[in-house]
Length: 115
Image (cartoon, rainbow, N blue to C red; front, side, top):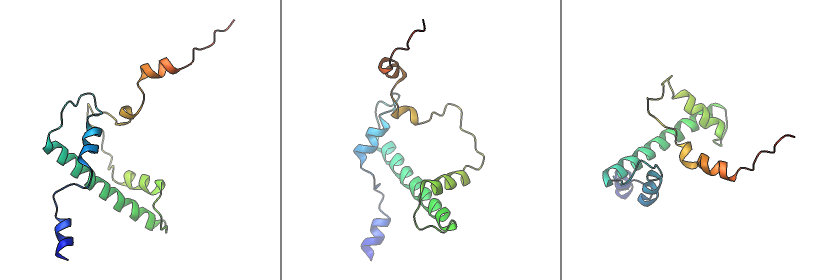
């Protein structure tokens, strides 16, 4: 019992440090990551995912479902937006995982000319 309580109070994040650091450095503006920043991002991610899972489970229960699906996650996100706007200068993370436009242009077939 004491061991379980000790694990719950542990200050070490659950995510592998190397993986989190790798994701953080995918942003071209990030050169180095301090151990404090790595800890805070890891812990914040854990707390965010915990909240998202709890709210998604509530949405699934309301719909009388036993399995959480994407629909339930969407409901949870919409309920917690509270009409907040995105701060100026905020970027979406999607661009990190997409090919650059230069790569897309290079790989795209040339358009056919009309005669």
